[in-house]
Length: 253
Image (cartoon, rainbow, N blue to C red; front, side, top):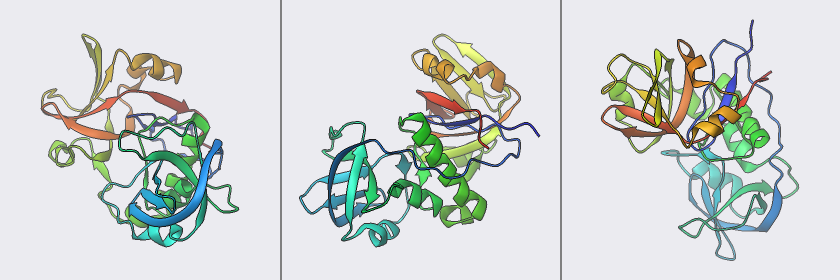
């Protein structure tokens, strides 16, 4: 059986050509430069916590929209953590975006949460090998039907536009067959239905195309292929996910 191309999210894209091959085993390559450490004083939400020195940390690379914070609190409260990341610049809300490691561990908290089905791989930009490892952790939970994967409604059907539209503004996974790939002006459309104003579509702007090409992804090659895409749902007027970058792992194992 031919192995699939697995594309992991970078801002708004995570697609898998679904041919039935297994995902790569969990790895832990997210060992960026240390950018801090401290003891967890409290958990803010499903992907954010506060250190005893007052800093608020947001876990990079995962989404937990609608997922309870109790599991993160059980894992981190009172624990010493090391923070690693590309830089230590705070986001616009003053939070530090980082990969967190429990004392003595080389596996990020993000991978632990994903492997338990307590999070989804986000559409943020992450280094390729790290993002691939996060996707593998998510795949482990999916195969074992853990956490959120124990339900049947995590992945939305691309043909169910109303169901996807109900999640406007939320991080969503959609699966379906790309019926056509069309370009209109500076935008490339992956159309999952015949009615372009009502059915689900993925959009790729001209500025995002170099990143998609660098990933080895030719949008036209996705025509008549079944893919899985994840990102933030918009309505314009039909449901849309906008791709702003991508990379492809062509050896999912």
